[in-house]
Amino acid sequence: MKCMMSVDGNNIVRVSDDRAAKLYHEGFRYVSKSIWKEKVRDVNKSTEEKTPKGNIKSNKMSKAQKRHMRNSNK
Image 1 (tube, rainbow, N blue to C red):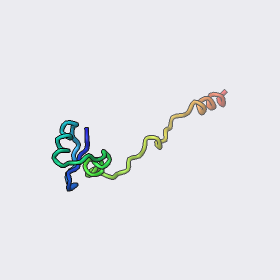
Image 2: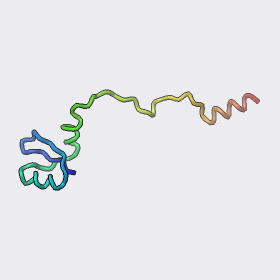
Image 3: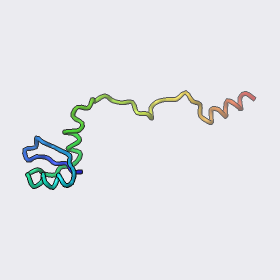
Image 4: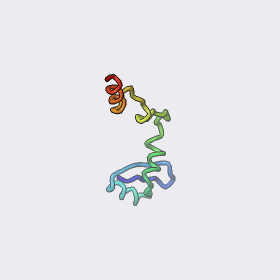
């Protein structure tokens, strides 16, 4: 897969290698995938921040806490 941009810069497409070779001869140029991502793919995505899974606290006791509870009950 290749990312191609038209000469005027209005049209950015992601196409197969064979199609990219044809578009190159029609005047398109190769661009990086990051340009395609920011201009085409991520245009309509919401900018809501998702909570990372690493920050969720659990009520589950660790092994050390369980061991301490067993030893303190004796």
